Image (spheres, rainbow, N blue to C red):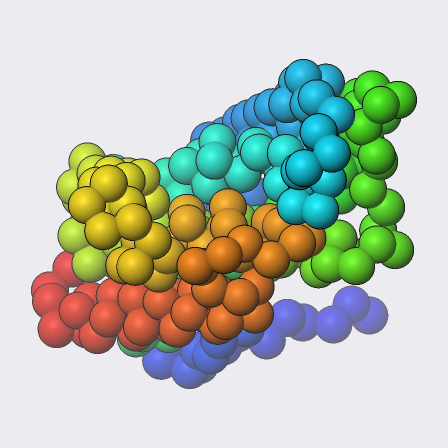
Length: 263
């Protein structure tokens, strides 16, 4: 005799149920597959091309030469694609109207944001680590014999690759938070581009690294994705801590704002 499935009592739902619902929605979207595929191909291509064009350092630059930063050059492209996908995870439901069904199933908005962030964050973390490691190993092969090849056993290299993969997931979570705050795709993507590219570039031109070093893209390029220290920027773990604080604060704000609004 087959077992009769039991139904969840009305109003009785928890994080596992919300996370399962978000996983089903995420994997069923074609945009998810295409965006992650674009991230993978784009990052590997940029990394290989950059490494193939890397020249051997002169005698005066050997001490600061860091090819690891070159092989992870594709982060600039990857962060934009993953960040936009994170935005669409939230705003796509508002534009299509499916948010009503979602909130009918999970009325607890902070729980809903936590489920979205957990599922999307885990997926992009796995993809990010896979892409950065593949890019690293393939990029090494593109180096000319005159350029010293970095190895994972070298000081700071493994940390740089791992944190760079985690950075992609963190940008995706920031995208989710911006989507929850604005609930509008264009506004959220505009805010994302501003935070990642426009504002730090303007600040870097005006004040150098004094303020710009606290922005995500500067942290990724000068702190997380390097194996050798860069002057006048945050240390790798300090930068990673700042990013964690950004993500937690942004998601908390997104969940709080959703809880104060009507669907």
